[in-house]
Image (cartoon, rainbow, N blue to C red; front, side, top):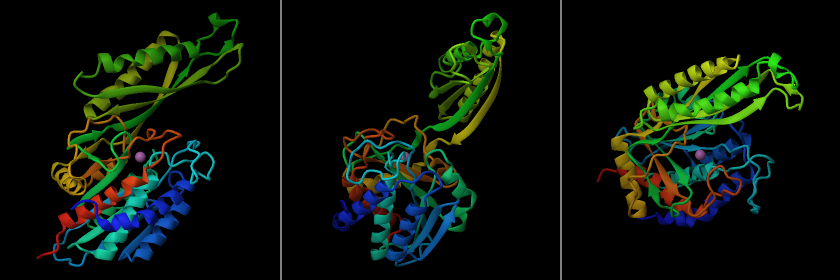
Length: 389
Ligand code: NI
């Protein structure tokens, strides 16, 4: 069972949805145009149930199979939000919303799941229910968590959950997956270094927050190399440094540092968090400065469950012939982890061909990947919930 012929027929239609989403990117939970189009298409296909405004702006829809004796309910998830990036592709369907861009391919993910929904409502060649989950705010807004907080999995009886993400640099329509940890926990932190400001000509009567913050930046580099177990992956990146004035002749009273922590295991994450605070405090103190430390839990690690990974592989093999089942985990983070934390499931990577990287102003989702993505979802439904002979 390779790519389903129906998706080759539907490709121009699905690609047109995708390019329309691409031209009208929206951010975080604020997705009025995107959600209106998704809901209208789902109603047009004839889904059996639809609920809007879930987790503020998510959509849940249910498709009943031709039979319902199995009692099985499988969830499929897509993300709908774009990024605050100025698009530089120059494409005919480039963003018409200045400063916003579908630079992570969520326009493609949403269109793929809509394409699968169209096919599944036409054919209903399965015994059970498919629950479609279209989530807002994947890009750091906690959209999946917001939907899970409203009890989506329990209310719709979802038993297992699957999602996909396009993957630049691997052949179009190819699949990569791995059982266990696939993507990291992604947290964020902020350190405000407070010294004593004053005249740039009189450093001896100040406590220079710029110098203290610089020393903190350097000292934090040693946490991964000196404190973390060498066999545990961890990243500490300082990504922002701002003083409270940029005047030539003023020593700033405070400096703000921002950064991200990426880990796979909770004890490592807690160690890194505690060491950042302790090292920053002690380093700043050596310069006569104090700190305010804020640490935010971002997304959980994305961990593929063993059985569901097997189901995802079987469907992908049916579509693509072969699957790379030993992809190297990435320190990137993914909001789908919040769904995997409450239900067993699997997240698969779909080749996007030789495109620019994700979150790059030249990135473009590859429409040629659509039939493989749609076929994977449809095949999963039919394989996991076969019609009785
Ligand atoms: Ni993404």
